[in-house]
Every structure is written in C-alpha cells, then in structure tokens.
Image (tube, rainbow, N blue to C red; front, side, top):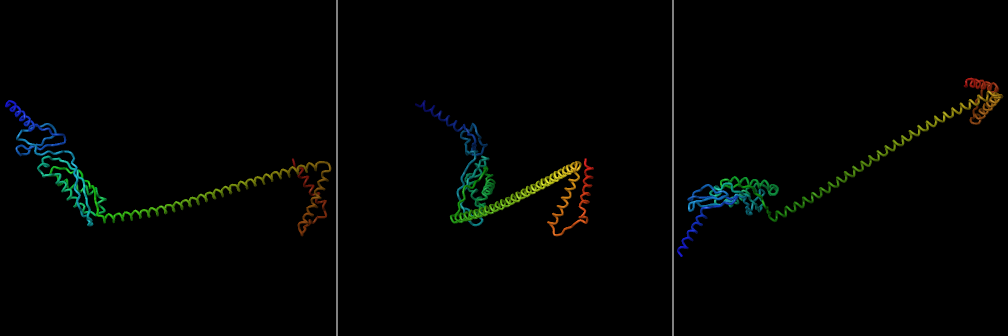
Length: 319
C-alpha cells in the first residue's frame, strides 16, 4: 500500500511543480510577474517557465479595448438647469506595470474621473448647446481623462455621451418651443409659396404679353408685306395696262395711217375728225355752264385740214 502512495504523491508533486512552473499567456493578454515580491518584466503571449515558489503571477491584464459604462449623474448647466447624463468610455492598457502599481483599480478611477470632468464641462455651457455640442463635450472628457490616466498605464480612446435627461418642466417648455418653431416655419413656407406663386403668375403674364406683342408685331409685318406685294402687283398691273393701252393706241394709229393711204381715206378721216370735234364741244356744253369757244369756230374746215396735215406727218414718219 505504501508502495502506491509514495508514487502517487511524487506524481502529484510533479504535476503541481509543472503547474507552478509553466505558464501559457493567451493572445492579447499580459501577465505581471513578481519574484519574491519584486516586479519582474511582464510575460507576453506564449509559453513561459517560472521558478516555483519564487515567481508568481501577480496581475493579469487584457490588452483589448475595454468598454465601461459611466454611471448616470446629475449636472448643472451654465444657465442653472439640472440634467441627468450618462455615457460610455473606451480605454486600453498600454503599460502593464503602471496599470498594476499606479492605481488600485484603473477602470473605477477612470470612471470617477470621467464623471468629474463631465460635470465640469457641462457647467461651462448652456442647455441648448449640450445637445448641439456633444462632440465637443466628448473630446473635452477624453482629453482630461487621458491626461490624468497616463500614470495609471491606461489610454482613454473615446468617450460618448449616451443620454441626456431633462426635467419634465424643461421638456414641456422645449416641446412648446419646437411646436412654435414648426408653426412659424410652416407660416414662412406658406408665405414663400404664395410669393413664388405670385412671381410665377407675373412671369407668366409678362411672357404672355411678350408673346402677344410678338404676334401683333409679326401680324403687322405680314400685313405690311401683303400691302407691299399688293402695291407692287397693282403697280405692275397699271404698268401692264398702260403698256397694253399704248400698244393698242399705236396699233390704232397704224390702222388709221393705213386707212388714210387707201382711196377715199382722207375724206373719211376728215369726216371722223369733224364729228369728234363737234362732239367734244357738245359734251363740254353739257358738263359745264361756262363754254369756251375757239376764235376760228366758223372755220371748221381749216381746223380739220390742219389735223389732216398732222396725220400725214405721222404717216410719213411711221415705218
């Protein structure tokens, strides 16, 4: 029996010794080792051998980003309004020795410092700006906490204001203000719409007037062009009429000249001239109360003879 107990004890002692000697550090973690109570370089990820009963792992730290809620607290704004604010903080261990020996609990210390800094920042701004300037508030908290946490071996990466709660009376007042602002914008938008509609109507009327004037202008141009063409056509017609009348007159004169050359032509022409001469005086006597008579009215034959001489000259010059 004793032969079994002794080997079992030896095996247990070996296993215990191995457990105290061999350490496996996971990835993204770091172990702080003390030898006889004195700090030694930390153990990074991997397999490590310790001296049993002399070395011990005093602290274990994660190198991952740590997320911690900052408890809700009451803050007083610059305009003396009490608000309740909570947030979220992101931090990371960058120095294992400082995180182990610089402060007892670096997470709790960072949270307390974030709350204190947040109250200070909120107290410097008005209530309205607490909602508008969340980014500036976050940066102020990060800057202050990060500077204070450097001796603790902690890097504050980000801080986010999660929620800002207002008293019921302030909420009611803000809701009324929002409703009033919304109604004002609706009135402004309606007036702008009416103004734009009036502008559009005036623009439409102006364009319609321009179109009407352009149409009337084109109509007058067309009418003037038509009148011009009409006058040109009438002038061409009158010219053609005069030309045809002249041609007819010339033809008649040539016919008369030919008739004069024939036998008895002179007597016929003389008779025709005498008839027209007498008819002209008769027409003049009917149309006017005043009658002008030539001095040689009794010598009709002489007058006819003179006209015959003129006809003979025309006939002589005719081709």
